[in-house]
Length: 181
Image (cartoon, rainbow, N blue to C red; front, side, top):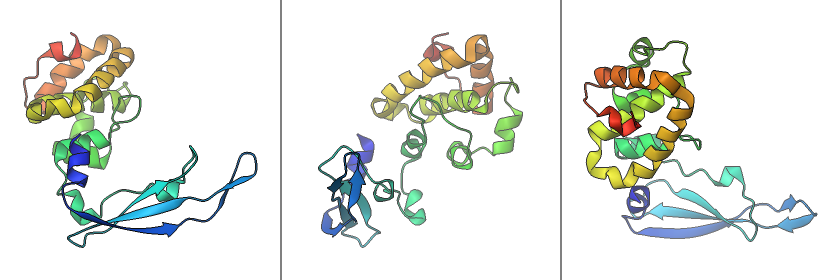
């Protein structure tokens, strides 16, 4: 996957630290270890956790890059990282930044103002991926399938109108067949 290739493209050095004991369900203490991956170029470390249980500590899962490095991540990787587990995208400032359109313009161009903004954002995300990142399709096509399934359940008969408006807003001509229309 593209994200894995990016994260492992430079040699890493490892150091470990202990996390405090956590009490789990039946009173058993589980000691967790955090491994800090420090890039050879001196960039900020990325924290990972290892455990002998199926639970994890949320504070140990922060793998977000420092703000200066965000711009080095390809836009399509940034976009797919914003996708929700159900297949949708939310209309957020970062989402708008990736598309290169102001949040207010996106809101104003929504043809169905009564529809949840995540439906509109998800249509725009799929159109943007097709218009801007077709050569990386292998990286995002499964995510697209989940998004389209979610859209069909949420957008109903408005989907055709949303796709047309999305193509107009993004100045693209993505075929509505992509959405099963």
